[in-house]
Length: 331
Ligand code: PEP
Ligand code: MN
Image (cartoon, rainbow, N blue to C red; front, side, top):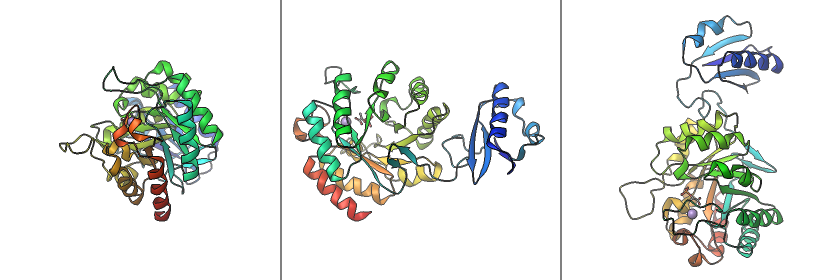
């Protein structure tokens, strides 16, 4: 339930109430909506949380039940869209967030070439995998820390933010020390212990939709991160498994307006994994922008056919630049 506090309640009074609720073992989150403090009680569906107990509190003006199960990701607690501020970049604000880079970080030179090119073409975030979730254990698994070092240098030199996937809780601090945004890949969307740990880093989290996750499951995964007190979650639609075998995945563009309706969190689209087909990446990126996505994530490589991973869906630097020109004309 949500306790809407009276208008004259100060932040410190609201914090005091949160502390008392937490002392009672009730997980509670403080937020502000329309200049009024409110406390979401997100745990403890038992007799202690009977609304009557709280209505009598002098600080409380009104009590609202949660109708949706995604309490923190949903719109009931926060009606306005969230804007995630990372250094001088905003995700969910006016400007489209463009994350571009290779599927895997392969070399220092590759990262510098890609970073300087995509920065000039209008990207603001460099992507690259250092710990790769590969279907086959015999495929390239990523350069690990060495790769993260290349990416950090290339990103900083070109005034880009950076994003990379974490698969193992043991690598959290390491990856967090190199990148601005931590990515949870589709295969780990429901790795609940990883979600709980990643939230605690306090870093912004890019959460990719699971291969066959419903919107509700996707938002409940976000809920695991938000519940740690980390509000900075970015949702990423990256295609789902359907009966259609032509494309690697079926990119669900409707996820953009639907997730925006259900949640205040920013929503981005990955047309690379979403289609698995190089030629389909630009049209689906345009579709994402037209649908109101807050950003896109695209795999780009100086020599796409030679990519160590996901070559078929990786676009060239030239294609990226043409795509960005068209996107700039759209927005
Ligand atoms: C990736 O972004 O490199 C990746 C592996 O994506 P996904 O988890 O969506 O398959
Ligand atoms: Mn990839």
